[in-house]
Image 1 (cartoon, rainbow, N blue to C red):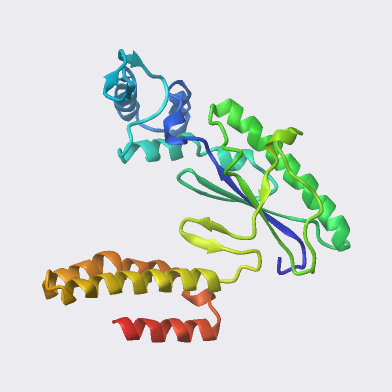
Image 2 (cartoon, rainbow, N blue to C red; image 1 turned 120 degrees about the vertical axis):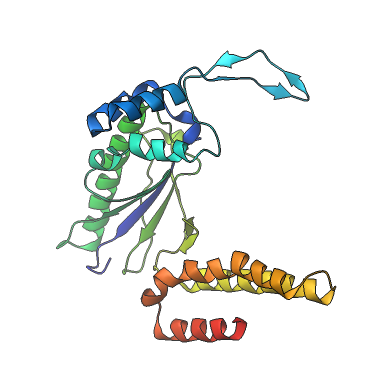
Length: 264
């Protein structure tokens, strides 16, 4: 975007990502140099799982499952990341950001040509990317949630994109353009500003501190409990803002510093 080229950021959502973990596909872990003892342990942990369906207190018969890991297990997302570690190498021509089951892809138009030609080039790159992503999704048996997959258009030039994007020319799966997206709890906008995110976080901090103070008013808490609540539910928000502090404008940094001093 700094080079005046239009940029598209694609936020891909996988349908029930951890529940779609393919057991037989994990054979690819052998090529990653994982010790055989660990592979045997993972195989035992995954195989021979059974489950049942309960509706209004009525349970079905138990049946075997060949996909998905236990919810709440730390090994399930770790195994998902390891299983899909080759995804970024399969999606060329873009910058990949892959965190657990959250995938963001950034593509830019060609440099050195006029804006209209850059948009046409960007459209071609997006379609190639979607074709590669759909192909990888079929090979890994990891379906994509088309309804939650969004795209964001960013450009220094005034104007909006003039094209539609969809998977495999299927008009039923047109990807929606969005003006902002919440990715890893950060609110991202086309102009890459942090104003909305800071306002959202400050509002959340005020609400939580007001709730903690209300406990003192009703006399149902101690200073130790209020301190514990602050460290558990308020301080982590400040910690979440800290990584983007150098990216903020001078005014935003000053406002945030005053805001922090006021509440601490």
